[in-house]
Length: 286
Image (tube, rainbow, N blue to C red; front, top):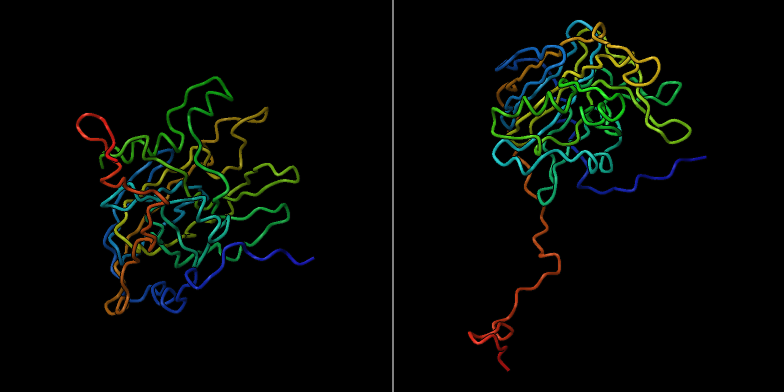
């Protein structure tokens, strides 16, 4: 039986694949920043528009929880749910990471993914997950009765604090390198990360970005975090490398950052007419 067509279609979702393939070419690009995010920690950094950012497994498989904001206006941030609808539930090369309303534009476009051919495994697992979200200490306390301060939510909270953001700014993530799916009961499952050392996930910053990444305390997620078989999976935790690149000269000729959403309506709201306003006595004229 043929699967139903995608619900969201249209020219606005098309990308210039030739342009992004050229950006993915490593020839002549300049490294402007490089660092590692240690295990069970988080870090935030800026990526100027027109630059590329690569997340890399350093010495073993590791899941990373990625948040994005517009660097100059953090009210505009990555919208996981709409990206899931406009692109797919597990993203890869040429997919775009969209921002929240009222902005609704691509914050970033994925240019290179060494796991893009992973496909669907025998249990329905796929990589680079938008079905789930970040692990957090609130759910952990609810399920285990214990406090733990190094869940992805907490790692991200600490990471963005130097940039003036708070816990309320941390939002649903893109789970990079994470393998997930839905079982026969439509329940979310996680599997061991299939990444190998030096696999990478790379994106192009369409606008000035503030990025934050948590190296998940579950590591490669091969060990259950909750339930009867749960244990501390610190032995399967690894760092993630981050590199920011400036493309080689000339590649951005003709490119410009995407505009905010074109809708400028008022959602049906109407300003009161002068004749409808009460006078100083509280009486309405007429």
